[in-house]
Length: 454
Image (cartoon, rainbow, N blue to C red):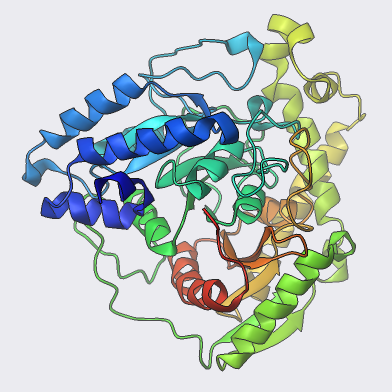
């Protein structure tokens, strides 16, 4: 029914629009009805103009079939730290209220060329840099946080307000909302997707990522962004322009070799994550996979500390413009960065940078022995209240290491809220990781114990 079109995944929308079963105007109208009904509770949008959305939907419907891209008509939310020429980019900061730079980020140019229907700008914590949440609530329990900093993107996808959404991660801003909202979240290899035209907190860590309700949609987005492994079979003549190539080689869980790594921050794990990781291992073994436990070498025990040192140092430069323009209008955390209240020396910064750089090939080699490695996504279920977006302890390690990560939903904690488990792989093994995540996700979603009620 036309009223239920909002529930379609990106892949389903693209197929139905391509075959003429659905018009983009019909699809957009269904989405806007869903948003109108749910936005008073979820509050996922920092900017949304229904008239603009409908006008764009009608324009897309008029594009000749031979000129349509792989995302033609697919509804996408955009985190409000990414520039969009036809919508303001406000960073959840009073310094940038109604800020409209009239320029598209590189990622947005790519999405527009692929035919995407950009719905609006999703909420974020201030500059995607603090843990103080916006007004957005968790769609499965409005008394709880959807996570951050990509709060609105995770919540909007989980609540069927858009098919996919862009987010960014400096610490845990993709994976944490993915887990808290019960959706897939994909943080690609650092540098694999252009960051030109988005607010940066850390040159060394910031990564653009994608939220979706299924791995097929993550694969579609990876195709559009031309993510390729060295042995990738998605070998169109012009990368990311036409429909994705059919996969010729499949991954099977039976007989595959996995590992589980609790990491050096395992003491942060609560009962929800302890149970989810244990159940994940049980399910994979029941499907015939080999799963062993591995640990980081003791020499890398300070990875979380090194991440914090680099972030503090790079925040000094990142927020100096806002500090100079209006110190009284930015968060104390950001003032602390600029004023170097943590007393991070240049020598400490360099040591942390060099230590992380040396760790990356070591960890790549560790991960390369397995189809993927299971790691915690979050300490536990989404915390109560929306003022604090949660703890990124389990995410900063992989952000620092630049590895691709996928949060896979399917489990639940003691309070009935979703808890995800992440899969990681070596750098630039993004497409491989998505293939593994698709098969693993089918198992976890079917047997993990959590089903969305919306």
